[in-house]
Length: 152
Image 1 (tube, helix red, strand yellow):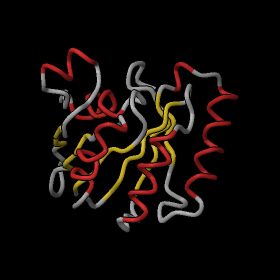
Image 2 (cartoon, one colour):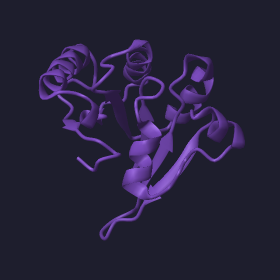
Image 3 (cartoon, one colour):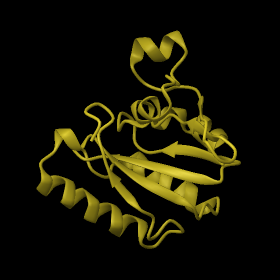
Image 4 (cartoon, helix red, strand yellow):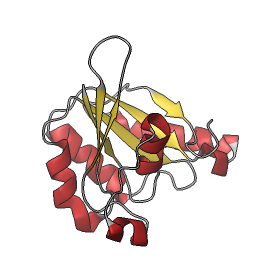
């Protein structure tokens, strides 16, 4: 299964993949210097049964939208990431619209950085996400509250 991340810049897509797979998908010196994904990154997660999970880490910054589009072109599953402290942001909406237009129907939502938000804020953002997903092909996708940093 091929899974692509999606979401606003600095919402934790790369950190989440690092926590899941042990792979830092930001490999370019410029990405390290700027602290943001510019080009597509790749990671794999072996499974005991079946094929490994393949991940494509896409950039969230609006300037790198063509790279995001290249990364989601042939995916099977979307992992939309929204930071609990920021909530839904412009590229969250833009990436979700792209996934919807591409016909992606399988996905999950990672409500990241929950260690930086109060439980009330986490619930508020979860409600925003549910409302945002409702008119899309990803309506009803599971939402996982987490923190790649703390391990929640």
